[in-house]
Every structure is written in structure tokens, then in C-alpha cells.
Length: 91
Image (cartoon, rainbow, N blue to C red; front, side):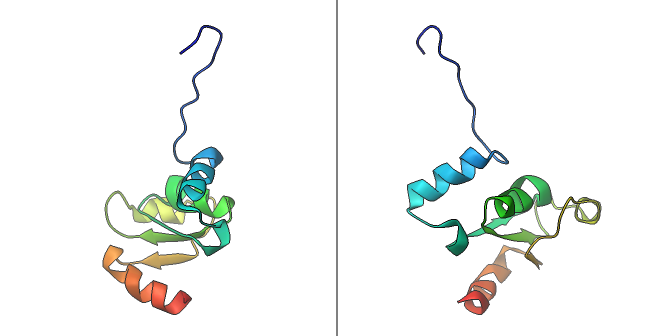
């Protein structure tokens, strides 16, 4: 790092994280599904950037986090194994 420059750490839920991921994939936000187990930092953060958000009830998912969330996921799935069926429905 050069003197006088400031480091920027980018990760979820920062908008720059989602923009960088979409740019790397060459994907549009409207055509992208974000699947995560954290309602705020994964799913709702992605939705705020125009992605479709799916919450999986595995990993660090907690029912009270969903109840107290600042928004509503586009989809709530029992597990990641339910993603293929969701993709079929969305196609």
C-alpha cells in the first residue's frame, strides 16, 4: 500500500461486494439469485442491490432473526437442497 492511500475492506453487506461479484460473473442483478443463511447480511443486502434473495433455514439461520428482520426474503427454503426446484420455478 502506498502512503496516503486508504484500504477499503469490501464484504457483505456492502453494496460494493455485490457489484464486484456481479461484474466478475458478468451477470445482471435482476437475473441473479443470492442464496444465504443470514437474512440481513446475505439475503436482504442482496435484495437492496436488485438481486433476488433466498433464505435457507440451515447454517446460522435463526427463526428470531427472520421474525425481527428489516425486510422479507423473496423466498424461504428449508435447505440448500431446495434451490434446484426454486430455479426451475423461476425459469
